[in-house]
Image 1 (spheres, one colour):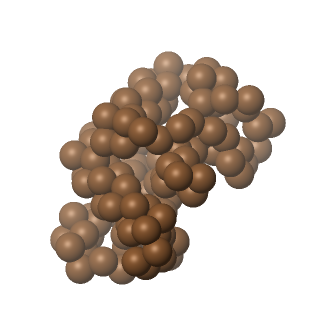
Image 2: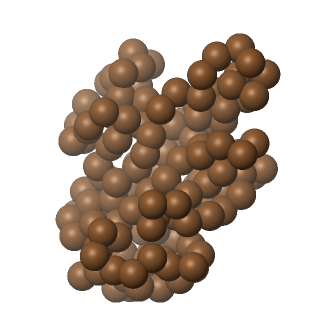
Amino acid sequence: MASSMMSPPAANIDGYIAAFPGPVQKVLKEIRATVRAAAPAAEEAIKYAMPTFMLNGKQLVLFAAFKKHIGFFPAPTGEPAFEKALAGYKTGKGSVQFPLDQAIPLALITRIVKYRVKKNAEAVKGKGKAGH
């Protein structure tokens, strides 16, 4: 199975998704649609060889497919409001892994994206940092 760290960078998100087997493509398309719905003003890009959504010139969220999981960045791992929701997943500083052998928590992804949109707006207004 292709890995974002081993395959050549795609030119766009369509190309990135196309590099994976059908079942993984389906998951990636669902995540992409979820992010787009939660942040309709965000623009798509490829950064660090991963599908990335940009808002107001700043990275909003990135995601990537790996052999056994989808990595989602940045995740609000230090935020109390997300502590319970993220408890069942492997997390790192600002990242969460959604296993491919489980249903992808699209409602949680929506919450994370909306949280990131809010942080992005605060940063643009100069009221705080975007939070990475």
